[in-house]
Image 1: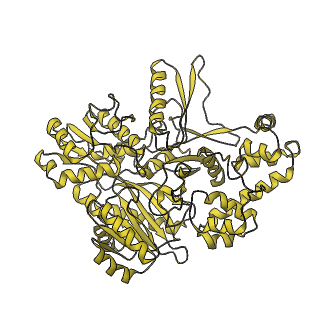
Image 2: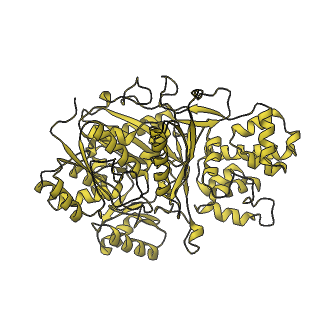
Image 3: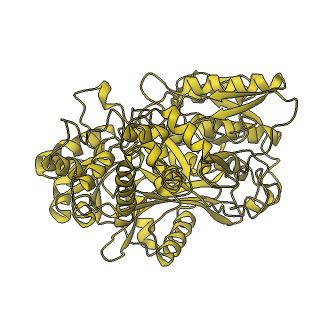
Length: 621
């Protein structure tokens, strides 16, 4: 089916200022969509209020409006520009809510502006808690026992039936705002009142507690001919009870049986079809009871989300670009895969590596803030790492946080073996409640002699993940036992590097310098090699230069072209307070300027939310 020719001009709504729960991932998605639609010959009108974005560059859209993102302001833009269509699924919750306000107030009908990508009734069905629950029950899905309430009287009646603890989720809010876990009636009343106040439609979902269950996300795309592909299955390291934006996540999912994966896949596609998302990407979240395998569906985002950005960078599949093309009538089998140039977008990505995302918190900036992680998001950024194993990618991601840790252990922030070494009671306290330091206390727990089963009992973290952490601690003990760099075998040094241990960690434990460790391993032929992210596990040749480092024999980077100048650009890493999207803007423009000068650019960054980590921003990534 060819692209729609009845549409000439398309309005895209951005996500506005960066807030917790909505960061630069929507600059990435909006920029990709603008480029994709303009390539197809459409005139693109953009509205966004964030000046630190690539999206608001004059070259990105045909017309750019830097205005507050409210339906009243957007109506004035629609009145002036008269777009044929509005694409609401690329500006996060802000874009979606604004589009719904425009529809509710009759603006789209008044100016004959069609909503594409997701219709009003589809968004309403997915976002309104009661409507979503009814839709899932209708198609035979299991959902947690719940009740939708609009006032305190309804809430008090519902809690009698559901019981405590209870999960509170406000409708149409961002990053779990207005949500929480109530363990007693006092907490319950406070959190419900807050949720009702913060929900734009004064609606709160009260849900049966499934704390401790395993949590998963499926990224899915569908076209107007009902072709659908699963882009990525993402597993949360932390069990249910922690907002997915605050949870360490791993792709592909590591602990699902094939039967569970196929059930989840079928459920994802059934959900997409029942809700009615005709074109574009969606994110569907599930929980599985580890004791009996019961699977329930939690929620669905009928739009490009933070997880979409992660899935896109994890697989190399340009979700936002494809979503934009699907919205204007293309089918998945009509869109080429830029990376292989042979396969089409209907080929599901296959990855032969492990991706780990770790959130970045800045509780140190707010000493009075509660570092306990709940269903309301608190992180301000995230870092992503790729490795051949979970252990390697985890340690790389911990380094990428830029918080002074060189991996799981070692360095000045390592409390083990110092006069500040935590006692067992301190460790148990940190393990029992999810918090920003829990990963490091899991290591302390193993070092203190706690068994894997004891740690699992306290944390509900899947034993597979804990076993990998235990293996890192066991290897750490081997490294320490070697005593000195000179006494470490080649095999131990290579194994340490393959498990993600940095030169800084090894230098700390062997009381030497990083430079000495690096020099020694290079002499022994232990050097980083680079593997390609190609969407197809090397089944087809890849043309997009997107790489990650590991310690194997084969290097997949091409030789430098003779006579060609090359400059490396160091990115800003994860967003944090004081350092955000504006530095990604600078990196992108540095790359664009070098391209104009005929100089090859090499981008190095660990932030999956950014335009700089798009596969086509630089010559090499």
